[in-house]
Image (cartoon, rainbow, N blue to C red; front, side):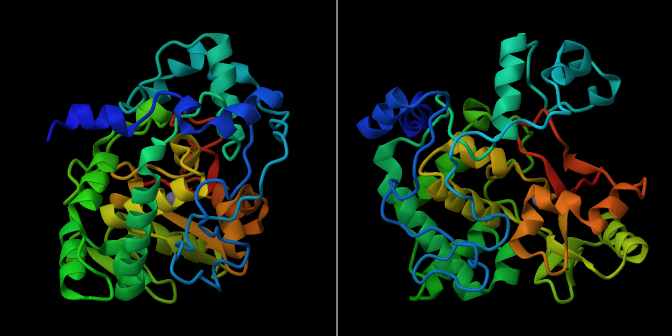
Length: 349
Ligand SMILES: [Zn+2]
């Protein structure tokens, strides 16, 4: 198969191709357009209780896919944050020199302002957002539902570690999952190998191959969480945080393999009605998640899905964590990855 030709068809260069009604809405609204949910197929979307009541037939993962209310205009950027903070001088900051993944060239003031507007309003829709070609809508839904069947059958914990080859085998072995078809496999491969900088994500590739597997003997299951951490640095850091902050801190997502990240990203893309840019402002595309090599998420017990919102940064737990001095977060405010502020995502060196 000619991958390059396929990719050209896979990603559309603008929203024009996504459907006349979107264009019409844009022309009748001022500023960045915001589309309603439900236009992207008839798929149900998770509600605030999605954690407790997964929707029959289509199971969104409760982790990282927090409910997002239909936006009614853009929230104002935080007043303390000025566009100037990302201008040329800070791009040359020494602390950023080793971040080889940063590919943002010298930007104009307007480009910086546009970029910051997007990651501060990550769940809004912008005219320059890039969409999955609408011709792939059916395949997107079918493949996402198929992955949900795998997760449901294998269990959430095991699914975190599942390799692509394990996924194929599970499909062949269990009729309630069903074998993956060639159109689905081509689609998964194209999603994995597409260059996400085209739709606005600038983090580096973590997994070179879609078949990269997690070595089970290198991870430890964390009690009462359903998640795993890599033994050594990650596990030690998590244990230290628990000791210093207290037992109200809990692991909310640990090691994630390629398949888990693919499922999260596709489900997010469904939720975003095919808007790949919007999806990637909240979730690293497949193969680009640092959860594959040691990063992990923490939350406050009892905060539920709000652990994956900026609300977490208002908790006593976050205040303590940020004061420890030995903890960094991967996606701070106004980061250069094209990703929203994620106060819960702990960075491993
Ligand atoms: Zn995370």
